[in-house]
Length: 320
Image (tube, rainbow, N blue to C red; front, side, top):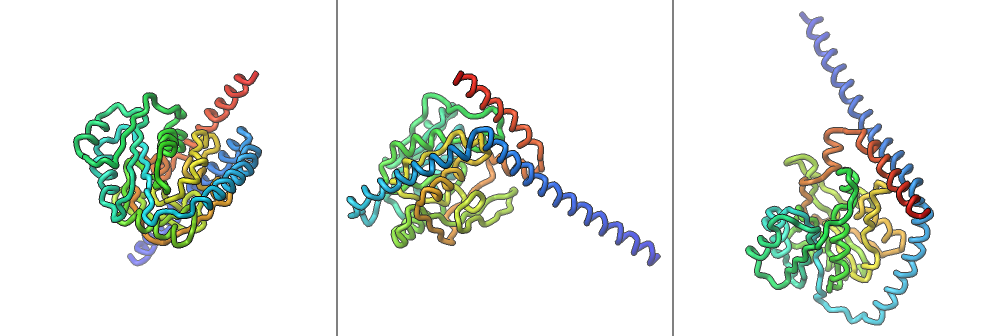
């Protein structure tokens, strides 16, 4: 009897070890495949040469903007902040969760720019019906932005086109990005603005609660700023940096366009600061990456490479 119990226990432990070992192998394989495909994608599109040229140009533009800023150093104590939300057919979540989180802010000197990526639902109708705040401005683009066909690749750049429209028309001295399914903490703008003014940084960010699985949350935010260390909603930056736009072709390098933007800012020499306070909540809706991680579909990034290669062939053919 005792031998049978020991045997059952050992079999159970062996099964657990095998399962954990397989999980570790899958995750390691996923990271290896992703890294290899990122490197391949970057080589295909001449990323390294392009990035070096862009970095040099951005450093010069940043120096010019800083000179202009010195000429206008009498900044207001309560500067206007432009909150920019790109959206596509998420009327209910946008009007029930996201917009109210902006309107509840303890800091009230803001404008709210909501840019529809050619919404075809009742987004505009619900905004007009539920909110009578003159600070809210909704613009629905006449045409949907061009994105990759693959849902995985589309995730890397979705919303980039309306975000750039928002940057162009923003009147604020500071820019606060927000996705249409996420929400700010009530003191989001106050915490980040006070920290930016106190430290004289051009970009500041805090931490956010990220929903990894339904009902399971993880605190995201650390220094230095890099992909995975910051949520998009956690950032506040000077509008003098608006010359750095979202790169809507960053999917070709398998790099999210927000992470791409933070990286280019860092490489240009933007002054960046981190404050370890929760400033918002990142919800699970619509995240392709979470689906990939949860279902461990290692093939999805491998399958994306032919589309990246094809896009380069089309580009070469057009140049002939």
